[in-house]
Amino acid sequence: MRTEEAISVPRSLPSVTRLLELCREVGAPRDALVAASRRVLEDARKAVLAGGNTSEVELVRAVRAHVQVAQSSWPARVVNATGVVLHTNLGRAVLSEAARGAMQEAAAYSDLELDLETGERGKRDTHVERLLVELTGAEAATVTNNCAASLFLSLAALAHGREVVVSRGQSVEIGGRFRIPDVCEQSGATLREVGTTNRTYASDYRDAVTEQTALLLKVHRSNFFLSGFVANVDIEEMVGLGDSRSIPVLNDLGSGCMVDTELFGLRHEPTVQESVRAGAGLTLFSGDKLLGGPQAGLIVGRRDLVERVRRHPLARALRCDKVTLAALHATLLHYLRGEHLEQVPTLRMLGLSQAELSGRAQRWRDALALPGVEVVPVASAVGGGSLPDAELPSAALVIDPSHFGVSADEYARRLRAGENPIMARVERDRIWLDPRTVQPDEERVLLESLSKAGQQQAVADADADAARGSA
Ligand SMILES: *Cc1c(COP(=O)(O)O)cnc(C)c1O
Image 1 (cartoon, rainbow, N blue to C red):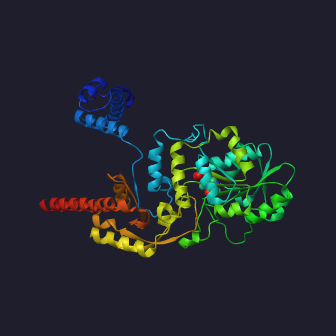
Image 2 (cartoon, rainbow, N blue to C red; image 1 turned 90 degrees about the vertical axis):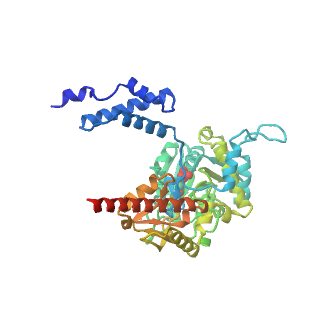
């Protein structure tokens, strides 16, 4: 039985007070040191009881490491070499230089809610609204924290206590358990599902409309695709149906494309402008998917409907902050100036040709001059719940880590854990680095890290050889 030992403090460990004395040289506030020392002693106690041992030097080192982790800044910049343009785990859209500058500027005092001309109070979304109206042709616009919030708020403002008609093929989960039926219920509206998973006809909507119907809802299938024996009602027809009964159409587009994706050799993604032109009462989309801006939920459409959304009591709870609005404004300005294809990183990355990418991968290979490295044609993905079936022809630098005596998982872990973290793809026991998502100013860091990882291993191998030789 080990019960007695388990509850007693191992003799060999110092007290918290003693450890604090030993940690006098660790530069940190006392509270942080006390917390770190307690944790380190707790871990050490378990290790000792499990038969391990430790020393005062090791304990001090552990406290120092704890304090460093606790005080390090976050988030850390990561080089995205996965080729997934909108990578949710890496923060989705990369913002333009101008958007970053605008965020910096907005961090100080600003005219966020002030009309500088009159000195009167203004609305925080006026400037963004003006750009959205200009770009999309809508009468009015407003902004929330994200597209999920925009959908929830629109349903709450326009359909509380009434019915919303949606196709069963669009009553879906968007991600992170954000499900259309649940959101609808939370908003106080009742979902009326029509049609079947694969086929819904205009007559299905027509038959479902009653006195109780507040909205016809269309949800874009942005994160999956349905093919084969499928029938959908397009936005024009839905608007026609709605108009005949004075029921607005709420079009949740999600990905929020404002350009023709065929430019990138991709399937046509419905655009915000098309939805507005078709007469959707409100069109909702994300700021940080294909638009390429900060996380935000954009709402454009009829003035009376936008006003009702804006005046809903929860609008304030879901509004976005000044830093986001600044980045969004800067992003929209790129579109207004017609410079979005070059200036918005998401669009710039989507537009890179296989020839350019292959050229970059070859330059990396030549600069590295390591064994087991080659350039292979691949497909990059759009990601972030946009264009799920899309493949963009690219070329990857492929590393076979067995040349350095480590597994692909271990090599990938080292790349992630390095001073400049790198996210690569691991497939078929190899490391795949797609230049599409590596920003030009990150190349130097990437190559240094890759070459360091290889050299480290070469040094380790040489040591191992020497050890074998002397044995
Ligand atoms: C992504 C998406 C959302 C949610 O957008 P967030 O900005 O991530 O909240 C909502 N609806 C659709 C159709 C989407 O694709």
